[in-house]
Amino acid sequence: MNNEVAIDVFINNGMLERSVAKDIMDEMSNSGKELWETLIDFGIISAPEDYWNVIAMEVGAQYISLADFTPPDEVLNMLPGAQARLHGALPIEYREGEGLYVCLEDPLNPQTVDDLRVATGQDIYLYVAADYEVRARITECYGGAEAAMGDLLAELETMSVGSQDGAEEANAAPVIKFVNLVIMQAIKEKASDIHLEPFETEFKIRYRVDGALYEMAPPPVHLANSVISRVKVMAGMNIAERRVPQDGRIVMKVGDAGVDMRVNSLPTQYGESVVMRVLDRNSVSLNLDNLNLSPHLHEYIIDTVNKPNGIFVVTGPTGSGKTTTLYAALREVNTEDSKLLTAEDPVEYDIDGIVQVPINEAIGVTFPRVLRAFLRQDPDRILVGEIRDKDTAQIAIQAALTGHLVLSTLHTNDAAGAVTRFVDMGVQPFLLAATLLGVLGQRLVRTICPYCKTPYTPSTALLNQLGINPQLIGSQQFYTGARCDKCSNTGYKGRKGIHELLNVTDPIKELITQNVPSIVLKQKAVELGMTTLREDGIQNIFEGNTTIEEVLKYT
Image 1: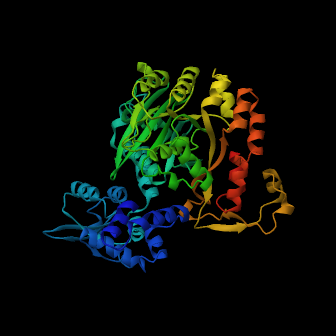
Image 2: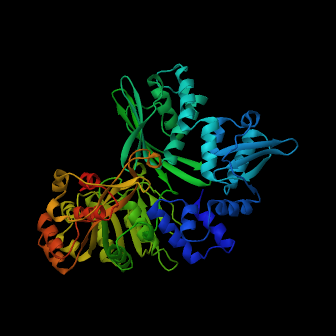
Image 3: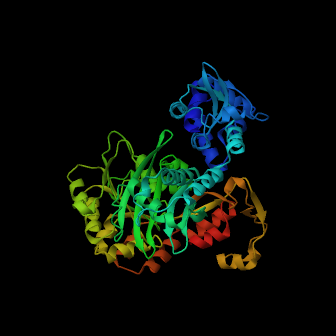
């Protein structure tokens, strides 16, 4: 259920002040609790039934409990299992002359009712029950995602391949359903990437969730080309061409939210390897207040994006949240009196009020060309998706010198390394010193699951590896995840950023002008009070946010 929509219901019913709504959303983000649990903690309601009664009144339905209820088989048969799982719908009863009564996991989504009406050919009426009860009964009556996948895999096993490239089977119903289920499951698990990898004797499908890869049940290896061809069809790619890498894009509607996927194919020894980057706008919070930044860093970013000119850079490896941080920063200054332009490859998230330009090198729409055009568009602030080459870097410097604020990203190991990278690309040190405002180094570490968080004592070797003297930790408590169903038995749920901020003050500018090595620059920044990535990671360990293993992995 969309929590923001549900909160609006409580606000409109006079049960909640809008000023309190932000505190509730922040608490949900920090604690991992459901909305109804958080409303109880805040004293808005006293029991779960109160929450679902309010939702029921909103949609004009009756609240029921499913604790001791199982729908009759003849009613269950009116809605196929695949549809029930897809829409989160449980049929309750059928009334002759009226239609089918159902409980939905998300009763506030009107689109679901319309979809069910089309799927069943019946008029749809609602009962309201707790979403966790609806989910449990759907799994009990129809089987869970594993059952749906099992049914499809059994169906796929019987398929034969009519052509070597699988083009004919790409539009076969079982293949279409399988690919859709793979994508839906990835969105449900909040995966950032889907990997389709053909090998000689197997066809692997893996999800990247919270930065780690997990394998799912694979289809038969002889249908690898069919599944990959289906993905290429959806992405608008050439399925006949299997010798060169290709890029494509899939846009899907899931409920009332849009999901974009960037698709890349790579020829390998045993077929094409395909990776889909999932850009789920619902799963990303483009707001500085929701990024769990330290007060100092939060204040610094707001102050920086309000400056009239200069360059602010966020560094880190792929998937470290650089773009999310910059988007959130831009939203702080997205006002009517400010002209904001972005050049991205590709545009990841649509933001109202910002002019966003997708890079397309195939037709000559490159970063340098777009940036030159930007300077004639009278912008106040410019976001460059990535500074990759000398031309882009020099135009960014020119833009900063001519009264524009430029935000961008770089792929470097730490904040100080960004300075060396600029110089390597041909930027004069004195120009860099004159324009660079700051560099933010960033990593994403997995956070401990709040449902199975438990104290433990780390080994001396692990503490030494982290650089902590075991004799000096005193009564410091360490935590880990005991693994539970809520976190898919990983011990982790969600991610948060760890950061190091290189603030380009006068002493740092002097060193940049002298073109000193990055290690010297970093040492000086630490002397001036910079917290390194490792130090920020250790602080998050002490606060119980993450584990030693996660910090060691990324710092």
